[in-house]
Image 1 (cartoon, rainbow, N blue to C red):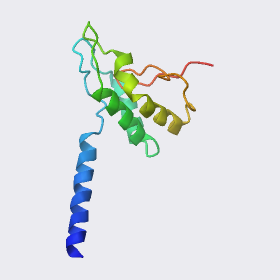
Image 2 (image 1 turned 120 degrees about the horizontal axis):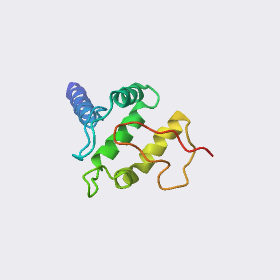
Image 3 (image 1 turned 90 degrees about the vertical axis):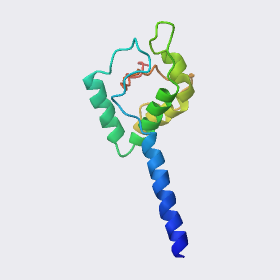
Length: 124
């Protein structure tokens, strides 16, 4: 029994550490060298969203997905379409959690910005 408890505690520690490694950092500079650094207000807004107990984990997963898929265009600026397309379901999950949108019908509900700022959805 003691051995089982030790294994459970060790596994929980490993899983917890793995989760910390993939957590998105709001102040990350773009992988594309021609992109400007994130603006202070954008970093602050991102941190508020990340800290949200209801939807913060979904927001962090979405932003991390976009970071992982970040693609630079021929001018070495972020290619928003290429970077966000693989993460559409993550973005939609976050937006549904926030009550911003229902099921999206397009491939991408809106363009996401590399700084962590989420624009308002288009008027219907």
